Amino acid sequence: MPDTPWDSILIDMVGTTNNVSVPVRLQMTNDVRNTRRDDVHVYEADVELRDADEYRPRGYIEFRDAEWNPDGGLLPIDYVPEPLYVPESARVEAVDDGSSMYSLNRYLELPLCTDPAAEGRWIHTDMLPFDSHLVPEPENHNLVWLPYTCRLQRITYTDFASCLATAYPLMHWYGDSNLRRSLKKIVSLGDWCSFNSTSNATETRSCLCEDYRDTFMPFDARYRELIIDIDQTGGRALTQPTEFALVPDNTARVYLHKWEGLSTRNKPAWTQEFDARITPRYGNPQVALISLTNWDAAFSSRAYFAVEMQKLLDYVQVEYSNYTQLYIRTGQYYCCRTDQTPNAPRAYSRLRNEYFDQYVIDAFRERFGHSHVIRIWNVAQVSERLPLSVRKETVKCPANHARAEVVEIENQILMNAMCNYFEPYVPMEQASVGEEDDFETDQ
Figure 1 (cartoon, helix red, strand yellow):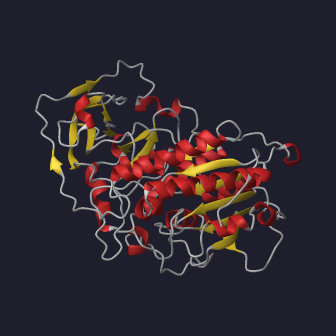
Figure 2 (figure 1 turned 180 degrees about the vertical axis):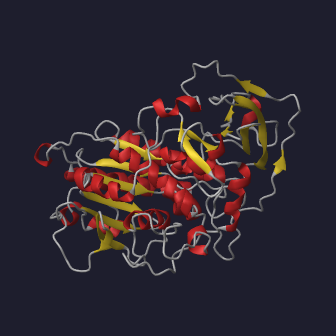
Figure 3 (figure 1 turned 60 degrees about the vertical axis):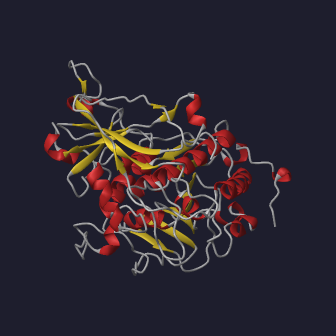
């Protein structure tokens, strides 16, 4: 990949009291040695520490010699991280004189969140200076996700269903099994893998990792296309043909297209549904939610993905006018191992996934930033900012799914962004549509 580092170095600034973990994003300098594989490499970074505490750097070298990027059929190498030497004197203190807007004591003064990519940190419930019920539920280590510049409120799934029916009665969702897990929470009104569920089994394998073999009554996860209605009683897949745009009162309707990203793993090819046209069959939605990276970083070369991305952008331009908000969901954060699946190892790495994510975000913003509302649902940063010891627990899940408690946090971020933010909609007859005459597809 162009302009990427030789080395993958994971560094966090970690608070010694609050255990807040802030990722350090190293950038190559213009030092000539950075042009040579076998030379010393020089990096720099800017880090903003918003919570008052004493911070120390922690981390290790994950890969050298660009081995973090097993592209074009290269096999992932074993993950053998090298600890970074950090002298005892390497400490930075962030002090709050009482005026900081980032102080936990002022958190409830912040405006409600409307940005699903707002940066945040994990705080243990014991350190909250307010009632924990005022924010979304904690994950399994009693850590709550608190954005720095806005406030997450705890939204019930019943209220979310009402919000969707009012503001987003038609939606198109494209994604893989990670999006399926999110939708399971939504259509079950939070019951799936919760302490309130009939199974009361948050520690089952399905809740921790793989759920693709489970029977889920509201919809059959094996289907590639589903139409799902959601109201205040829950969600259910429609089993009879229907006029998609004729949504019942007090209901939101989702066209769900399950895919394996833009990879060749899709059977049939992901382009098939777009070639048959989407909006004439499934209506003009208020939201198109698109999830990529997970399968693409795993099974596609960077060059192949770039070609497929251009096809997707062309399809999106034809199908979705500026009436439709584009929600782009990042891939899941990947950490602390490489995939060694026999016969078909996935080319994941922390840095590779990060660059795929950024490529997708940049591509959508470049093409549609002037014409559409684009929202980035950044689920990657949510897991990236967990303590490293918690991130390492994902090693037990080859599918790299977030466990159910983290899925709940991801959903709360989306629900707050959608329901705290209402963009006035342009009537469809006034909305501009992509130029079909300029649209071509490779057969």
